[in-house]
Image (cartoon, rainbow, N blue to C red; front, side):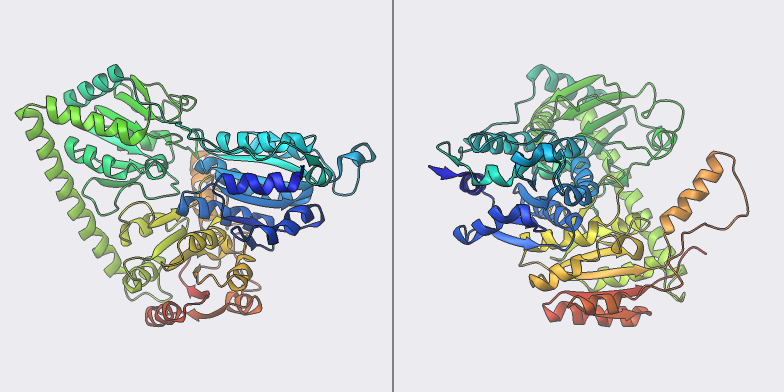
Length: 555
């Protein structure tokens, strides 16, 4: 006989879990009391449930391990839902749990009681509350399997305190060797290769799934063989393709008309991954250009051709499928096809050189502006970091400049949030640093975003995670100012009105003081020289450190 809490912990061990991110409460007592018997599992404590979920998401992305989050009953689960939504949009496999009140009190409507499985259901792939300890082993086995089945994502299991203390003879179930990525159909591979060979102007849009599948090298080989530009989704959580490769084109736009414009000269678009195109504003017409041949390669039948039509759709492991397509291109391509691909590659290289020269010229124009522009600040940060630094990015209006100024060689160098909810960056940096203790981790965030999960600073200090938190303080919600401009333009609501409630002034946020109050040293940098010096001190210190960078805003 064993208790439910032992089944729970043994299940985590069987699944290879080595840490839990949580915010403890009374109903979590069985789990917390069991930690001493499982020293191989580390527990990272957060002061807010959203921070715990965000850190777990960062840990999974950086380590490749399915993370576990333990939240506290209904209010705690509610606090974490925004970050769970981000994990769902990012396709992050994660087991979210929450302590539940003793089910024997269910009809008495106890304090903090609620239907937790129903509360979590809209933002997870599967949601369940075991009725007794006999169900725990199978429930956890299924939870990990569902979380890791494409499209990957978070799952939820409620843990009633009495179920965790019940006795059972049914223990943890070993995960087994699950092969979740089928091989793409050979006829579909042949058809895709034939279409690509026939294309005069192919393009690729490749998503985070390429990074999580470990298929970046295969993507590079395919792009080079085709001579095709490579875009990524509007909001990406990882770097699936090197940012300084000649084929790299950055992110595809957020609106259908702009997407069609970007791809207007392309006769074929190869989509690789799920959830590749996300719109903010409505535009009439299709998301992709009419008359352009569309091929979609995805690991999930559920997401294949889910939001747009395709000419050829393939379900299969991304690395295997891309390798097979590239092999077909090499074998079947004649001299004309190879010459055309070489010409396209040369054109891409020339365009990239021109882009870099234009970016350098734009930087020189703002070089001496004071306060310094975000572009100048990001240049100083990029120049001052070692080659192995990891960037956790939540600059939002600076996403494009980060992509242009930093050298992201591929997966593992860059992490960011999906879904559009803010506050993900400083929280995720905790998990990334926990997963990569030998590499410096730098969280780039805006002042507005940082305030959503500022409690992460305490967790960094408490667990001695040497994250460098760089807050670009423009003292406004700049993205909202951009968006209200777009709204006024799109809906013919043009006016000379100011930007309402979008400035972070009166009082000005004191990030250095907040950091010091949570045990993190820091300083403010108002000039490029001060920023470069602060970054050196932060890197040398080996402790969490905050740099509050004063940058210009949109007035």
